[in-house]
Length: 417
Ligand code: ARG
Image (cartoon, rainbow, N blue to C red; front, side, top):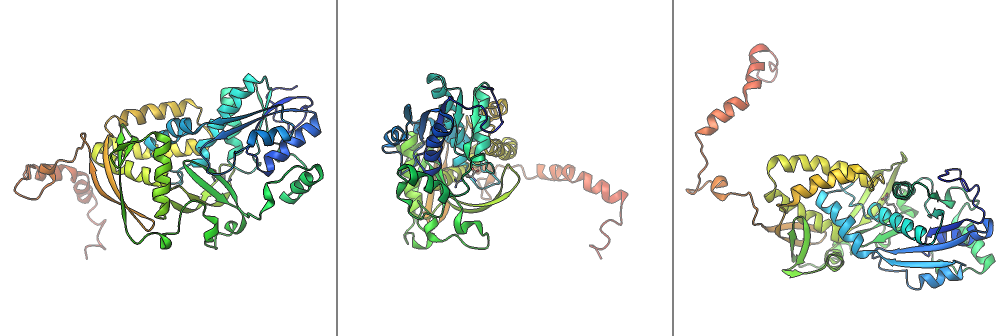
């Protein structure tokens, strides 16, 4: 078999294939179709990233579809600690908003696919992504960064089925159970860091998302009339306690998802620039991630010096692009992390946030590394700032403008009539 081919599905006959398997319609059809079409052997790999539904009985389902082996792997702790919290420390929000839940999950799934492909002696890995999304790139790049000899295929990019209906008909002919084809018009990807929802009426950017599109947050209007406070304690940029109680990473995110979701926090309606060049409309729900990003930023405001904070803000954008673009397993990400981790040495302390009808308000920030010096900031008798030094500072700071005005006296003629 040709290795490292990108030539569609040619030469797959008899291959042993590790398939990223969600148990949904597409990956169920893929599992069956690859066996039927190419006599392939299928090993399914289902990663638990903390999605609230599905995955129960997933290995049995895979076996029913003819899989030779089926793996259901708990990736929750690794996902939160090694992926989501890295993005949190980096302040990574794609195009200033999307906390990257789907994008962060893909490299971990790619890594898991590679591990199981090795163990099961598969030469091919397969995923259920389409040819116009970001996720195909994240899977392909993720697998190849770790295992350049593996062949990566995405049958949906090449196969004959043109619609969901075609796939359902294929399943009906073969008696493949289709998860109660209830008319869910949306395409949903969910994990502990957030939910991504697209398709259906959401494809029209002039239409506001209907309430039924949201999966894990209440609408701000329906949220309680009473604000709720939550305190989050960070150690070197990583959240470690809620309301002064130590909580493990997975539980902490899960608890915040429920708390903040109940107040309608973390909804996002976004038009974004996809890697493949199109603009797409997607809505997101990331209650826990939104709250954590908000609190983390507030803590950085008092613990990071001005220059570091400003440099980090620029890096946050690049970090988000890198994650979005599927470059997790890259030397650049390691270099970014080295910078981020250096900055996070001071980001310890506690932030209290008030949650109320979709909004977050900071109530207090405390840190042993706080750079806030009341004696410098105060306008009371406590004030220790050297006011007279302000004159020289201000004079030198303005020097370029004064020089310019002397050489070009007419520049602001219209302004100063
Ligand atoms: N646009 C998001 C991203 O590229 C999510 C993609 C998957 N969305 C979905 N509803 N299946 O990360």
